[in-house]
Image (tube, one colour):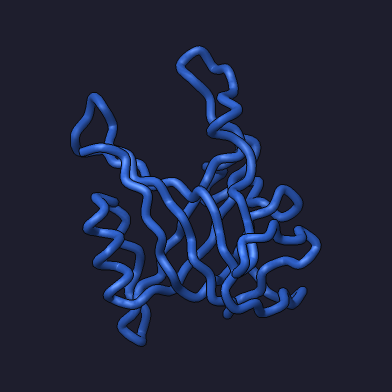
Length: 153
């Protein structure tokens, strides 16, 4: 299986996709060693979930009471090679654009309820066939809902 590039559409929650609001710790400090990570929860329907599974991704998320899926897509701020050196091409924030493809203004944080399309790569591990990496590459905001300061992660 080769690397797959997939776009999935859903409703965003807890979008931390900019340097200014990236998740610096993660669950049980999972993102401390990589200087934080960019994350977004996405509520998707069964059709989008099937497309994700067809790509080879092993992510299953959690089923919502409405029968949809809550998925969490992530991208480390710093990705390192075996020698511990930062790989610039795989580090930093994902690209965030508006529905016309224009760069998004980072001051306009993405609020819960925004409809977005996430671009992800699904890459199998070359040595361990049971391991598949799913990585957030970009976010396209299709229907913007402004961030409210009381939204918690």
